[in-house]
Length: 278
Image: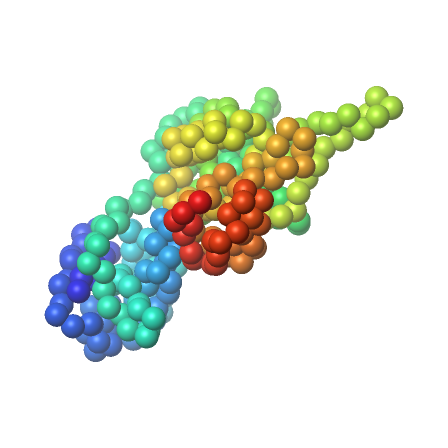
């Protein structure tokens, strides 16, 4: 059985054991009382991490393999592996080592333009923010201003490392809800805004898929399962990345419905389940 110990100094160690790791050893590895969390990062839906549950009160440093720049969810040394159906932490023989995640250096380069695509607002709709980089703070955070003429107010952004935020330099290969105008009659136009907690993107679905994979510069982004293509009729909705784990029941239900519409009636989808055969 193999487990991975990720250390706060940016190094890691593969631990090989003949039997499962018990609580006492986990406690020594993380330096105190142990708490667990399921990790859905990178679609590793069945992986579990163990860490020190008193990390905040003990002043432990953020773990660079897990912790975004502005968040402190994972502190101290962390052990990762797989918990089986019996609840035993059995490790993983197919070891895939995480990389230390860092905010893109492009965000610190002055006068670059970025499009921040997120889900927000009162109704959980798709949003776009366009900003220009202006430098960085004394503690190393990028500084921005709105990318429009006359903008002067400087600010930092806390969501640059969120797992459900996409960041693109310059223009995107898609438009979002609210940017697509339709004829409402009598010389009027209207737009649709969906409050469905998905990334509702308009454009060619294949180009969107490739553009997101190649051009999103947020290495912390994992919400591929929530990218939703809106058809030319502004009504047809298609999840773009059907090969990704459903991170919530809403997405699992949508995946199930999409499969049924495509004639795949024998595939059952659940939260944290990957669609292997389509």
